[in-house]
Structures are given as structure tokens and as C-alpha cells.
Image (tube, rainbow, N blue to C red):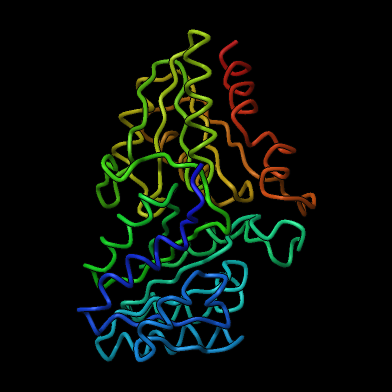
Length: 310
């Protein structure tokens, strides 16, 4: 079982490149431990800025450094980064088109028992609504590393959401197919198409295998690139299926499901059903307990697919 969270994978990639690329700077809001960035701060203190609990300053200072030619990576809990510093993300990063990568750590319901104040079930919708802001939710540590490697090569703003805990591997060090802004096809199917992002990819992958055992052909897209959504890949896969199910650790409005519905509805009309967190404060519990409660697990996805195909 994998014990390396996606946030640690981000640190490892940044440390590898920071040794030779002194333009890489990392900024935290009293969150270096939570972001697994303490090793970076210790190894490269001159390329690390601790802003303290000041998320708005975190984003604005990152934008200022980017305007000076730096490659700024700003890490903070997703619940605060996507709300408290929203105006700074909109104006200083996106509108100004600065090279700032916003890393929303402990995204979704990662903070579990801390409740709605620390959950980020709105961040996809909020960040995706900002022009020039890209939104990514990698599914495992290997894909996370590939994503960060790619982001280091461009100069455009982006928001990356990762969870707090380690997640089961989808890919491997030897086999991680990755193309920037293109969904990864994990399976092809003619009955149902599953479209998932972030931590929901693992249960969707398990569900696809379970459905196959029951004679149901399930396609699966790892849509890590929520914005820009891989419309071409989505339409190609949806055309082969009878129904489409989106799965996300997010509120039911404005996230992956909404985007999938817009594209499928316009390009190849099919019944689209969203599986997401409810439009209400979620129950208290670990991520797994929350997912199980709302059916955001392999069994829940299988049940929904069979229900739709009746």
C-alpha cells in the first residue's frame, strides 16, 4: 500500500529542479508541514518564503515574485486558498497572467472531523470560473509528479488540488501515461462511461473492474485536467457509451459534473448523472467514512451504473 501522499510528490519534484533552477521559489502560509514542503525549506532556504497565516499576502507576493521572473509555487490549505485569497488569485494571478502555481493542499474533505470550515467542496467551481486559471486534480503520486514537471515548463497560472492522505497508486514509475491537458483513458467501454478526477479515480477504476466481472462494459477517463477539460477525449469516449457518470469530491454544482454535462449535452447527448458530495455540510469523519456514507466508493458507483442501465 502506497504511503506517499501527492503533496510529497510535489515537494520531491520541486527539490529535484530547484538544485539547478534558482528561479523556483516556494511560498507557504504557515503550512510547510501540512504541504510536505519542510524538506524544501531546509534544503533551499533562499528559495523559500514563509508568509505566516496570511493567504492573501501569500498569493500577492507570489505574483510579485513571478513578475520578477521567478517560478512561484504557493501552497496553502485548499479551503483557505480558494476562498480567503480568491480576489488575489483572480486579479494578481489570472488577470495579470502571472507564473504562479497555486497548490491547494488537504483538498476536498481531507480535514475530515474539522468540518465545513476546513472542507473545500467549492474550489473547482470557484477557480474554474476565473479566466486564465487552469484547474488540475491529479489522481496519484506518479501523475502528480508528471503534472508538476509539465507545469515547470510553462508560465501560466494554475490551481492544483491534492488531498492530505496517501492514495492507492493508479499508475507506476514505469507506466504513467501523461499528456498535458488530455484525459488519460484507463479503460474503454460501450455500456457506461465513468469520468473521475482526483481521489475519485481509484474507486472508479475499481468499479470498472467490478462491472466488467458482471458483464458490463465500463469506460473510464482520468480527467485530471478539469480546466481546460479534454472535450475531444470526453466526446470520443461518450459516443461509445449509453450513459455517462461523473464522480468527484466536490459540491454538485459547478465542478467536473457540470462541465461534463455541458460538453456531452452539446456534442453527443447522453444521460449524464453526477456523483458528488451533497449540497449540505457533510458528515464528520475520515475521508473514507465520508465517501462511503455518500456512496462515493466502488460499490456505490457500480450500483449507480447498474441502476442507469436497467
